[in-house]
Image (cartoon, rainbow, N blue to C red; front, side, top):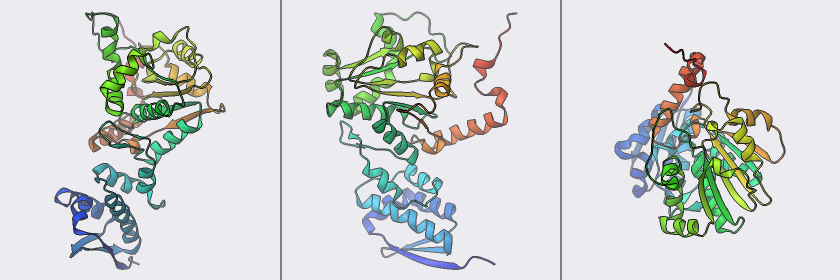
Length: 335
């Protein structure tokens, strides 16, 4: 028996239509296709026509977009895609995420989780001493950790911020780099600087850097130190060795918070070297005070094409496991 065709109506103010429907009605067409309904807008009234269950889901999604628009938010393609991808059992999903503002950028833009996976990640950082954020590119692992660190620093929950990552080349041999030691390691740390500038502002960052309150350094610099009352972020942790990861984890002092981010599918270690992140996730699983958050392609908040790229690689590697992370598993034969 075919589903009964029903019609629901939502009042959408004229000045919010373009925000909700998207340029050239892009978002409206995407919602029609996803929910298999027809959307007809006339005189400020949006009619949703289709099978009863589909109409209910579409109405819920459009209601959330309307609430977000009424709050003055610009609707993005990522908002629409996530509403469609997430099962809409949870009402007011976008509003729930929008309410969790971590901080504001230097331009006043709020920084908040955009997906339920990101919200779980942010809550884990709030509630645990050590948090592992694992996931593909574009899931906000580093950026959200940076926002949490800056917020804790501003609130005087910690006295300094320390950010580190292993200085390892991403599959390329860069050769000799001119300049002093700082100029040699800066290219490896640039992504961390970029996030700091955006949230804190270059001038404030430089002042705190000069005072020693913010430190951005290669992982090798952590050896022999005890890091008390600090917010510590280890980025690109998949490129640590077992010894480096153990060294880093044993630097944690009193009053400190630690966030370790990494993408286990993008290792740049030499062939045959085990990732310290992979080992740590096995060793520390279930340890009280340590949270492991696994973000997925659904949590990608960069350009929508990035999500499609991540999903395409995941599907390919699932079918061809022998090619996954091939550079680490391949044996090189000298000729």
